[in-house]
Length: 239
Image (cartoon, rainbow, N blue to C red; front, side, top):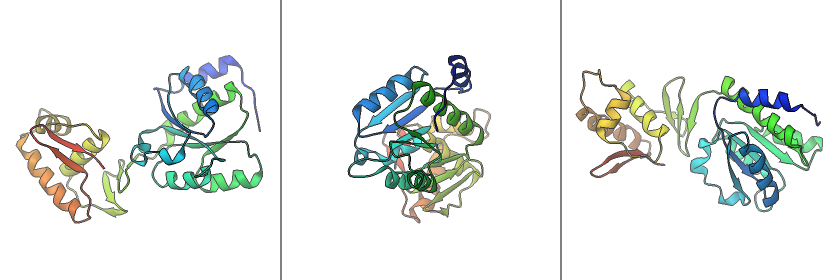
């Protein structure tokens, strides 16, 4: 079903999105990707486009706020990719599809997609749908940070590895969450201490090394080693 929306309504929708969103668009048609980038960049969004699904880096998918996914693609179809992505991310997944048959739509939604937009779609429709999903995501998003093997329940303050909870202390968990939220960035012991425990803590940054050692011991029991040491600099989370 298609709908129209006036320009002033679109502006209101865009103002409801509090920040620029990072959007991943996967479609084997370069012209479609360029159009999506052109449309959504006008609303301040950063769009990463891929024409080859097999080139997707699954280690970075949790960094996107929304994923646009074509159904009919050679090699790996959108339905198969959606099933994989939904097990790794909580963000909205919206299908872009020329297939408007009921079976295609039902299958996509059953696999975890949140919505679908039929090709050809209008500029205003795309902008309004994206804005609506981002607003709802901001309100209803269940706070989770997921990687290939590990997953953080940010509300429950819990780290699980392959669905098995890790018995971390409060301080250990906070260090893990801080590093994971900034995956790939290197932080010194002093920086970790200040960002996690604050200036008013009675501890000192020397305790960070002890915490890291204890965390690694617990994670190694699950064959999980995401905390890397950058000698002479500090630590980073990398999976």
